[in-house]
Length: 525
Image (cartoon, rainbow, N blue to C red):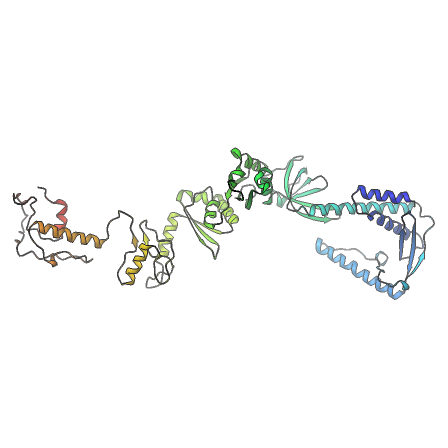
């Protein structure tokens, strides 16, 4: 072998972008394989090649006990390799292991126990050259596969563009990525999408496997990373880092929700993703074959974030529980179906995006549940809910938590109710709005003042007992005053107007509730 062969091999290494010396080692292995095929070849031999292209074959002689020990170690390594392949592939290996095929490692054997003998054949001939050629070609293919595997294994989660090569079988679709053919399995395809042969598609690299025929790249069209990358390609603010996509929730083929946040003052994250007249988001929807996308502004407050995540539905109130990560969302009656979505799609995507368990209720359902929970308790009617016991003027219970030791919260009006309750007084838990009807006690006090005023106009000073007291029980009819005649049982005629009094009032009418009822029908002068 001449020096030109060595130089040609090294030039081939540079053209194939292979590691230096890998083809020279393949040439050495090819010559060794060719030597072992010659008649009378020794079992253990090695080949050495110098820079001038000259090679020598040496037979290795060692003691029998050392040779047996090295054979046992080589056999164990071969069995371990077969077990590893079985675990990776899940298939039983039926390879037969022969002692002639075992590779003995005598590097750890002392040199004084090894004898080397030059057994270089005078002429290898055509068989040796053909064997060396096959070995070199095999090493080149293995090196190229390893290079491609290392290239694509670092590109996992990256979006690539390929051309559909085979679309007849719906279970597996082959996509040409240029250097390698990738596989789009049925489980990673989007329902409703059709992949025509020769069409270009974008997909995410989810896995790279090392096989006997080269690296096998697995693609996916269902991965949420596809939406992130598509927005990075269409929105310059995301590519520059001014806007960030904080979360993606996707139902492939139907709807997706993304949460975006701005890191620069004056940059609207939602507007940047939508683009002028929706041009940017329209390009992403077109690549996803019509899949709808909701762009949600990110918020650190869970209640506000949940309310936005349920868009396009309008949310009235959100109650959250930080310990259990559960949220109760109250929506108007006409927004309930929109908030839940078709088959619960909108609520399911909002829960994935926010990470909270969402319970959506209408206002009527929530008010009914609150009414039951407000008075739930033990046999004595105690309230164990821990919320303020005050009932607002709209009929709903106060949503604030009660102060420890009382049944009311810290609002001044509710604190006054707590103080009255502490003094043993019966309190009304309703908190009226401005301009509402007065309390029964105030109304009865007002009645007593009006009756006293009517008696004074008639010239009669009522006794203190005659003035109605603000007691909730029915008020008995008062005794007639001594200075007034008793009313006749017959119907009382209408009194004639007197010139002495500007507004004549029948003196016979006692300051009783009857007079109170007739206040509205007082006679005019």
